[in-house]
Image 1 (cartoon, rainbow, N blue to C red):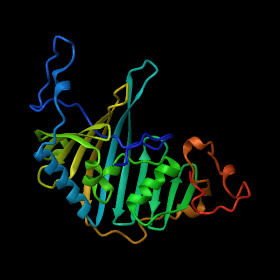
Image 2 (tube, one colour):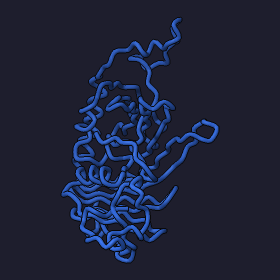
Image 3 (cartoon, helix red, strand yellow):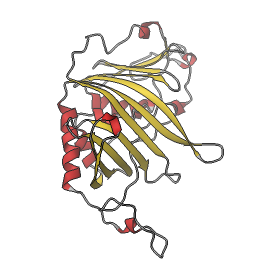
Image 4 (tube, rainbow, N blue to C red):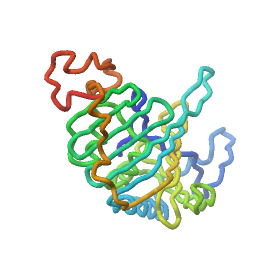
Length: 286
């Protein structure tokens, strides 16, 4: 499962919430001062596993997919208390090798385009673009974008080829919580699971098996900051225009190197052309 904390304005995958014990009720504090929930042994409830597999199968089977991901993530304030920030991404993909992510608000506007051959990261307000040759699948380009440029999307686990396979690799806990009629305006099944050091609470549409909301906390985060993604506007297997995975704005934007935000390369003056380099694909980024 791809779950990294990314540098710069590129957001992380942010999923999860609070858990309880197998009865899914708040646990009393023992005389020793620790919650009885801490004594609960790892478990993988079949009902929770079946739900994870069902939503994974629904997403993996979609030829095309369009949805909106609204992310809420906490960062410490000057006083140490967490502040909540938000961002919204419009996502369009076509399996196995096309992806578009447009994030107009909040924070710096960004646009990402992957057409199966090239991956472009565009900052429209600054009129800057980084372009690199890309591998032939969405999964591979997500991995390469993170490794080479610290680009990460908070909905990555929902768009890989086999979501359950990625989750199962680090799965140590999964249990069913119950139903809700609040999230997403539909009846959802709630479950919680822990995978790769992240504790996640997930709301899945009871009828369509599509994810509606996910909340998470990184277990090794001392501040225990919580993060949330709300999924809306699901459209599966819709027709997608052939030119949907590129933009005319790319041609008119100034090129910058394809590099991690912490590399110290931040402006067009650091581009391969400005440095007299060859500007080979793979050496450029934002």
